[in-house]
Length: 127
Image 1: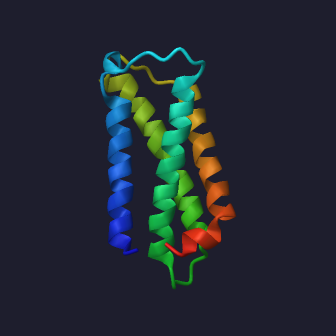
Image 2 (image 1 turned 60 degrees about the vertical axis):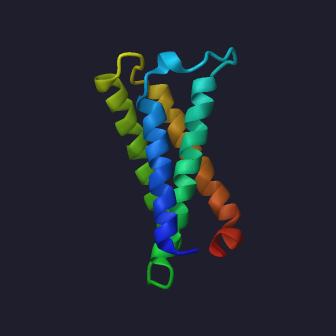
């Protein structure tokens, strides 16, 4: 798959996550399931991290850098992206608040994505 397409996919995923994290939450249906918000943060950052891993692995392919650098950059990017979104929620939204536990959910999702990418390295390398 061309790296430009992977970059476009990663940017689109990032935009979708940004939109849903900064949009008015009063329009979101209430789900009576404990910690639904944390599960959503986990899933968002799992997908975010995987999409950036795919791009960075293609970007670094054939270069002297180790493939695992793509994992590290994607993880750090995901964590800082999540922290930034939480800060923006606290500053610019009226129906959302910055939450340290959301940041933890983001980091756990990013960590799970790293382990999944390592476990499925052969399949990812074929993309």
